[in-house]
Length: 216
Ligand code: SAH
Figure (cartoon, rainbow, N blue to C red):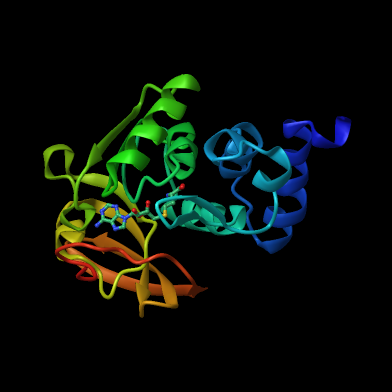
């Protein structure tokens, strides 16, 4: 059925959910037109994948609605040459969007089953510029630091210090900060060694659990 053609649904998602709400970066919009979001969700259903809502990805975790993924990505202001760190691989969808926009993507996930499933999907789609590891992302990923951009896709009680340390000069960090049930999407920038923080909007994410996050 033509209506369920994934690329038609993706164009519709971009036109109806992203552009009217202020996603203007053409490179970001093109990544959303290209990446098959339905490949990353458990039931692989295009009907659900391109809807204006978050979706379960297993282990009690969720993938944000397309608009939030796009908004966070736009604030990262990625250049084709950038190295990006993602905390919370989940389904791997956000990682693939990042991989379309930057040179290298590093992603950390605490659940091995999610990391393995994301890796398999990303391999199947041919992404070769994404490295995933299982571990506590609140500690960052020291080995490949510094990063031009860091995105945290789970809600933190405060900005984890190691992530600020692993941010390059001129780097951007986007992270939901706040309580366990709702947070403020926050942009942290490192300029001339100084940290500037800006609040973007309210949001709701699953908790970031780890040494510099919520304790289990
Ligand atoms: N970016 C994902 C959505 C992630 S949901 C996507 O595109 O699908 C948030 C993820 O963060 C969950 O998978 C959760 O297991 C993970 N997470 C929570 N705390 C973490 C930590 N300290 N380190 C790494 N991953 C963490």
